Image (cartoon, rainbow, N blue to C red):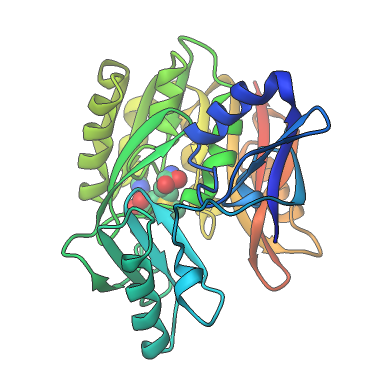
Length: 325
Ligand code: SAM
């Protein structure tokens, strides 16, 4: 059966395998194949593979020793893994039970099976879950060499943003001041500190901020991360003019926080602005809102990027915008 694989020259094979493994993207249920001078590395989520890699469909042998949930079912299952927590999205209770049983009986590491029970909702951007197996909702997720503890019942987290976070983190310079306005458990803040930035991370969810602090310690960057619980609008006056880089990952309502971002911005500052917009004009509304809020600055849009599809005809997008006084 053909599966998505990253194709690389054999010489770059081990380096690439290690990078994909760090991002938890290797499909361990299929063999890596070497052919015609290339290595074919099966990947679990082709959309999350960085653009710098080539993804192709290739027939590779299934690993003999692994039993997958698909082997045990008469339908093709879809699931996501966050450490040893497996996440499914099944409305039909019978199918949900069957899938949970197959996941537990398969060889994939699993301590918990969670079914999505609501949309992401409310100010804290958390969803309800149905616990189908296990007794905890906490996961340890690995991404690009960092480790994040996260309790899905209490905080927002999406492993699908791994590539996008990595793209932002790669731009960070040592000693710069990076302010993450909506930090969650720290998946932007902590790697930015890992790149040498001094980071301030705020979140209105006290549980998220506790995890952010724990994750900073876990990854050895606690001395460079100041995690503050509260509404960023109330915290911003203490950091007015401080930011060289500002991350705004609250896509449905980031525009309401642009005045706060401008208050935080230094003389020269890069804004990473996440938005959800219609495919007809995915970047226009954000660009106009930023220009209006930052009218004291020269505003240069450096990147317009579709992060992923959000709903039919709607995209989750990012703008990297330079503000120069
Ligand atoms: N950046 C994190 C990530 O990538 O996993 C979390 C992003 S999540 C979409 C948005 C976060 O913003 C939530 O954790 C929520 O609690 C927080 N939030 C919402 N309103 C806020 C406010 N006024 N001030 C600070 N944080 C806020």
